[in-house]
Image 1 (cartoon, helix red, strand yellow):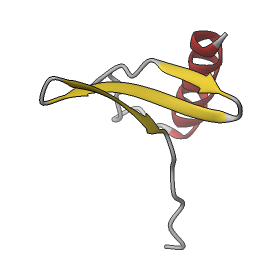
Image 2 (tube, rainbow, N blue to C red):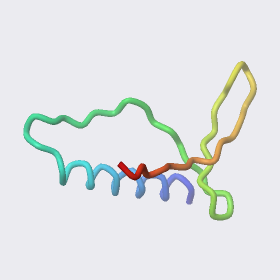
Image 3 (tube, rainbow, N blue to C red):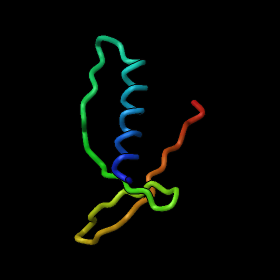
Length: 64
């Protein structure tokens, strides 16, 4: 279920970006972050200095 939610969110983001892109812009993948949902929190797993860690994926919108 978590991967499906991550895939859906990725597609929505890509569609939003593609809708505003001009002919000079290109969209390419820099990294892929698998997201799993724990309750209502999107969790991203990582490995830092050999330790498995989990982060809550969050975004902030600037007022600019």
